[in-house]
Image 1 (cartoon, rainbow, N blue to C red):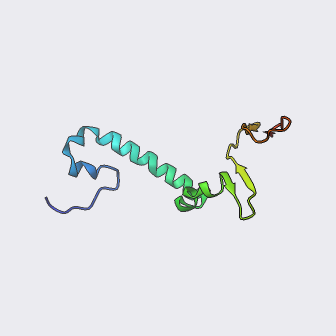
Image 2 (tube, rainbow, N blue to C red):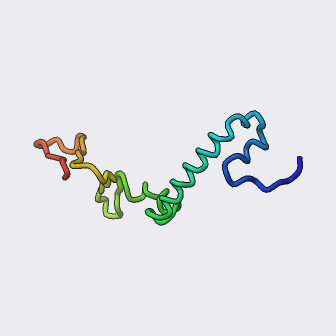
Length: 97
């Protein structure tokens, strides 16, 4: 097999598995879709590295003092509710918004 440059359109895998040839257009379409998402993440989230570390800020986090913070990304939400057994005392409204 001659060494060639790998195509930058998502079809390089066809060289490894010729049975994928009938799916060339689908591979190209999916590759373009992923490229558009990576570009959007680069432009809006300062890159994949920072974006992939969202778990450090979102969700339930405990700081050095034992304080628990919950953050959710829901830009179009009118309100959010955190439901659970937080206290055995009176009902507490956990509606935010």
